[in-house]
Length: 95
Image 1 (cartoon, rainbow, N blue to C red):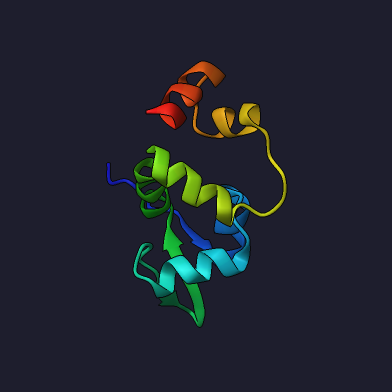
Image 2 (image 1 turned 90 degrees about the horizontal axis):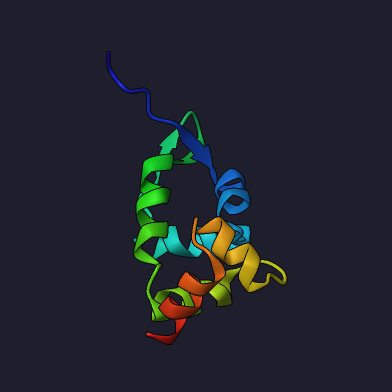
């Protein structure tokens, strides 16, 4: 059985990642996220978003990502979004 790939609109990517829409568009413009035009709308593969998120789990990446996050979040929220516990996140931030 073949796997069906999910494609998300920019607004959906923003919601999924916690970024604002402008931040998502900037990532596309910089080539950090691959996007395509489907039926007149910019779409990004969910697997591409997950790949990009995985790459952000470095101290520098997390700090850079924190600058792009829309609104206030705490370490517990970030840890949960990254499927980590707070101690593991703290270790990543301190590495």
